[in-house]
Image (tube, rainbow, N blue to C red; front, side, top):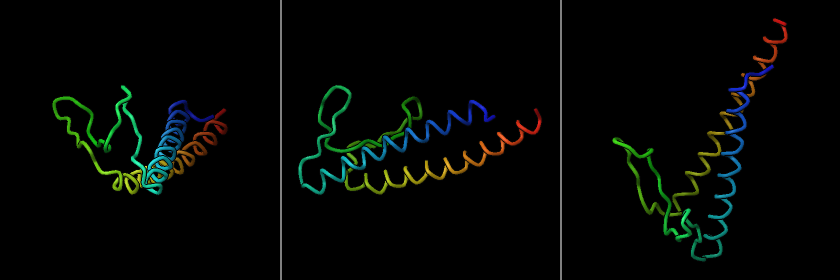
Length: 104
């Protein structure tokens, strides 16, 4: 049986991939159509660019209005990172499942 932590990490990685793929689709569609990109913040305000940052706090840093053209390679790298993470977590899950089964 795999641990709850491994299962949670796998689920979170899959959710992150799904969210990134949706954002990538939206950005590509808008860039292909040469329409203004209509991405809104939680308050419904239209955003003219993306934000990249380290969580806020004493050492927080954030870049505002990152061009959407830079978003595509960043989102693609983010997706690739999480897919690689899932591959490793799947190996971990197999290991956990076999070690737990053998011990029981």
